[in-house]
Image (cartoon, rainbow, N blue to C red):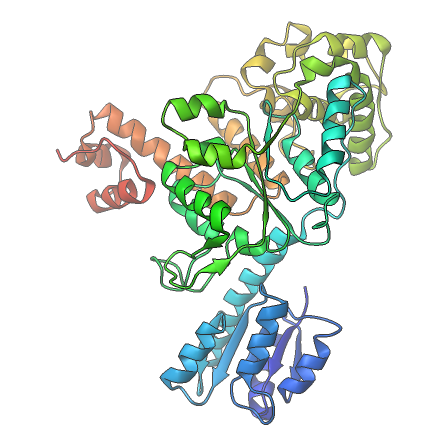
Amino acid sequence: MKPIWIVDDDESIRWVLEKALARENLATRSFANARDAIAALEFETPQVLVSDIRMPGDSGLDLLQLVKSRFPGLPVIIITAFSDLDSAVAAFQGGAFEYLAKPFDIDKAVELIRRALDESLREASVESGPAETPEILGQAPAMQEVFRAIGRLSQSNVTVLITGESGTGKELVARALHKHSPRATQPFIALNTAAIPKDLLESELFGHERGAFTGAQTTRRGRFEQAENGTLFLDEIGDMPFDLQTRLLRVLSDGHFYRVGGHQPLKANVRVITATHQNLEQRVRDGLFREDLYHRLNVIRLRLPSLRERREDIPLLVRHFLLQSAKQLGVEAKRMSDATVAFLSSLDLPGNVRQLENLCNWITVMAPGQTVEVKDLPLELSEGQSAMQAAPELLAVPPHAHHVHVAAAIAPAAPGPDGWLSLLELQAATMLSDGQQDVMDVLGRQFESALIRTALKYTHGRKNDAAVRLGIGRNTITRKIAELGIDGAKED
């Protein structure tokens, strides 16, 4: 983690903050004026910048303006002895993370810096992404068509809609389109619209202003701002709530958007790539997807073949995934006998390439010998893959998570008191291995929603009765129903 920079012409302020942050095991670097900090920004950047607003020479607002133009995701905390309204307004209009007036409580200052630090690390994790785009493999004619399409689209900024079944590699193709485009040096930001609760998705996409809603303690950049000059990949676009589709259409039409609670239009220079496994035409006919947005997204359509359509690629993919899994675990790569490869090539794998990768991870962890025979495969496969068809994603430990719940990786969770816990653990492991943020919040909300919806069904919609059955208060269930957008509740 990079150090926290403190810019203040008052040596005592610098000393107090340095000592307080050192007690928190946080590294610092101090500057007596903005000029020296600006010079240092040519060679390195801090994790958080804390700056006085009035100093000899360049002011803290000058420094803030420069930082926000070059490093928009860097949180800046403005400190001043002049706690007047004009300074506060100027600081926030310039994009300051927070405004702190002297004299300040040192514990509150450290708490504020901690909050800014968390925001900075969140931004860094979103924007860093993988250092290299994972390789897309395939010799089948259907995949060669995909490769040719990527080549033709590489120098274009045109909007692309990627379709295909779950697990066919839609995000890999989106990353390849970005990697070979003129925007390759700029951010690639991916967002699964189906994984974010609908009441949070608007803020996730467009950001929010401080105080826009309860809990919005600071201004936050959305994914459109994070992807500025780069590529924004919106996965599972077919699941986007109808009202948000209107906002997305506006951005695609005129390139402008507003943060939640904001009044200043922001310009977006972003290439948008979307993906879905759903039939968007049918969703348009069903009134679930805007027809005008569909035509705006469906400029170039790129369909990815299922694994059933490219069986000849299975031996190549198996070798690649076994080598990759062994490298991650630091073990010798296992091999499959010709009979085992032929057996796998004959199967219909509904989870497609992702399921095959998970299977190879399972084999690396669980298969007894170096050469894998058909009898060494999970029992469900050799018995006709019935369990895999029911829940293919639960066959194996997720990529990069071999150490998690190995017992649960032997087979999909069986019905019983612990079955749902195994499913929850595997879902959490999958989300964590995919680098998803706010896993606790997403799964927690889904858990609460499932409990309350079930209780309401059991009590025929009587929320007070449902609260008693769940062991929670009347006010609590009322608040949760509103927060989670649950319909069908009524007073007893």
